[in-house]
Structure formats: C-alpha cells, structure tokens
Length: 383
Image (spheres, helix red, strand yellow):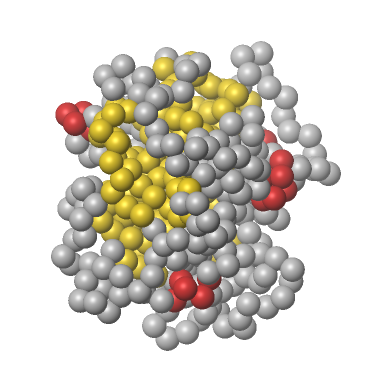
C-alpha cells in the first residue's frame, strides 16, 4: 500500500526562493509573463508533486503525482478523480513514489502506456516498470503487467525512472544509484546507476552490450548517478540523458551502448558536506559530458521541441531545472543537424519556479512544477 513522506530535497526546494527579488505578478487569468518574452498559462493546479507527463492523441494530458496517483487533465481542467487500477505496492517515501510515464509508440491502436515507480518490497525497495491499458474514457488502467524490476536497496533516494523508446521498439529505462550504492554504478553486473534496455514485454534484446554474461543482460550503459531526463532525438538519431551530480557536476550526455559515464570515479561535483569524492574529472574509458553544470541546477524532465509556433527551437532540447545554486528555470540547448550539442541558455529565471517535467507536442509545450501544490503550465510566446 502507499506509504508517504516528504524528502529533505523537496523541503529545500520549497524554501529556495528566500532572499531573491519578487517574481512577476500574475495576470488576471493567472498567466505569468517572463522578462524573456515567454508566457506561462496555468491549465491545472493542485497537483501533489507532479512528476511525469504524457500527452494523449486527443490533446488531454496524463500526469503522475509522486504521492501515488495518476491524474487526467481534460480540456485544460484537472479531473477530480484519479485513475483507478494502479499497483498497490507504490512506496511513497523520500524521493520515491509514482514517477515516470510514457506512451507506447502504437498507443493509438493498443492504448498501452508504461509507468515507473518505487516498488515496496518490505525491507527493501527498487525501481519497477509496469505496462497497462488505458480505458477508452481514460478513467483507469487494466491489464497491468510488471515488465521490469531493478536492484533492491534500503534507501529511498535516486530512482531514475525516465523512459524513452528507441527506433527498434526497445525501451531505455534510467535507474539511479540508490545514493548509498554509488560504487555499484561502475559494476555492469548490477542495476544501480545504470540505463537499462528492454523490450516492451520485458524481454532482453539480443544485442544488448552485456548479454554475453560480462554484465547484467539488461544494462545498456553504466556509471550514472541519477538520470532524471532522457529522450530519443529522432533527427540526430541520439539517445540523450541528463543526470544529477552531487553538489555540482550535473551532466548532459549522449548515451551509447556499453559506455561508462564515470560516476563516481570521475565527477565535477563534491559531496553535500563539502568533502571530495574524487580529484579526477576524466579517465580513460569514461565518457565526458556534452554539458556540465557547476554549480548544480538539479535538472529534471527533458523534451525535444516539435511544437507549432516554436519553429526556431525545432529539434532543440528544453530541460526543467528544479533548484540548487543555479536552478529554478527552464534551459534551452541547441542541437545541430549533425547532433552537436550547443551551450545551454537559461529561460524563465525571473519566475523563481522549479520544473519537474517538460514535454513538447505538435500543438503545445507543457511544464510541470516540482512542488507539493503543483501546477501544469502551457508555455506560449507573450507577443
């Protein structure tokens, strides 16, 4: 059953605005205009720690609440009743709860979606992924099937939980290092600090890099800390992920099969108490980030822009930032036609709001805030 708790990190985020200049006042309709010329229009309020969003073909939105509920936003209105049929073993504690969501590539014909969450296993817990069928009226789930279970741990931090489909129909799943298990991130035989790759039925693709027995067969890449944003960029044919560093050292990486992304052997960050994790920022056989953030921005959620009215950003990345010394903003990252990653550009910094997720549909860009009393906004150009 659901167990509840608020993380220290959430409490820090809720109080992170102290001492800053006042944010712009809302318009009569509740919208907020940033000095960067962008406008946030609220379409749903009162969500408890919204975490992931998915847009249905009819324009409605599904939103996960970390507190263990799946909600429907219909015609820009939050439906009162949560969806039924969710698993009963969702552990809501620390950073855990109901987390990622993505639709099957054939959703319009099979109504299948995927949810990731922290699974309660008694004395331990882990990241798990289920598939389910969405009812025609989007009121609930059926055919709920567990397709992936990560490594057990005793902590309630660093669950990863973003998912992305690749062109061959396989699914990438991000798995955090569990905080206390960071050394395991360098060991491809276990699932702490990894990106896994499976098929939608839970089977393991035969071309995964460690299916020969040299590591866990589901591991796609390793040396990750806590991947909180992951997308497949079709134009550049790239799997792109960003992850939280410790104190400093957030990273944006191009993820390739079998690669080692270094954590915790190399990092641009330090421990929260100021002690040194390692003096090394690079090493043979370990990948360097395309972008690094020092100080941290606490990145979460990421989208490839594909929205009418934002053609100047087409194919670029939008990344939510939740806090840290340089966070609480939206970040725009240019992606070249050849897949080159440009320098990040900060947006919405004056609004003093952290964003847990961002998605781009053909019709709109949506941002979900990262707080207890969460809001889903539609992003527009003010002019």
